[in-house]
Length: 381
Image 1 (cartoon, helix red, strand yellow):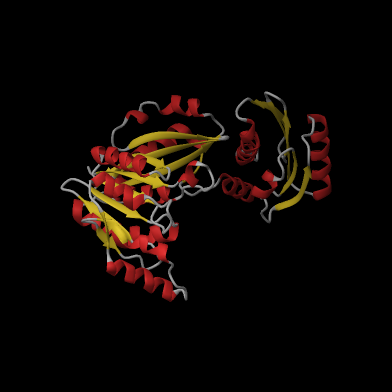
Image 2 (image 1 turned 120 degrees about the vertical axis):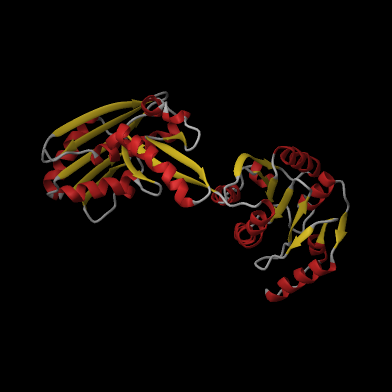
């Protein structure tokens, strides 16, 4: 199967000044087109390093898509880097300059002299007109490779990817298949415990099964390669059924499902309204449970000890008339975070204390997801 790599260009990405969303968008588009993606990389604004990264990518994959570095300034090096990688000179294209002038005129502006850099492309390049921006894109071809250089501005990149790059790649490489992913979301059990239950499924070749751990949640991803979406779904279906049989209520949803939605839907099904107390979470739990069935909410700025939390929960449930009152407090320590949860429902009252030794920055998310999952599993008998 045809493989591709993605190279995002820009020192600002390496410095953490902007988040690279382009690579994710391109990766999903390539997946849907049935193209394998094994490597992505980011390179700063250095012509030699970019050229070397391109050579390496072209030695491994048939397709290379780059984003960024096509602007008019000195630190927009993509054109020069591609020319270096291919061993050719840059050449001025009058038709591209006319396109740049026309774009500026449409915006009521006049291009400056340095905008002429955008009308230079490597010799032999196929220019790609950019109807939504001022930076023309281009592609270079060899007998084996296609290198497509797209702007870094996301809306421009997305437009050119959809309307030019992908149609070209489908025709050039005869792309007919697809790679389809289905993600099952779980909560209440850690990654190693989930792995223990499904190890043999993770050894499948097509579909493949993989895990991605988050704070208090684990995603189970099923990915299938096939000639059509329907065939891919048919491959995924029995594997998903087996995963659901093994993981049971640990699974709260699939693909775009959110844990808070599963929780509020469960409470609505039981006919239970919610009162909420949280401490040390900066309002994160209340923000995720802000639906119409929440009768009352109290936020305590600092973490509260268990005894105080119990008293607050009992008082709020009584004053609000809610069927369920939940209290969550996160006490932060230098090495360990302590999570207290108190819950009063029509069936029982319960208090739980757990410790979290992971990254402190994830402690609040872990506590919130843990609380949502406990609410989601409440029974009415």
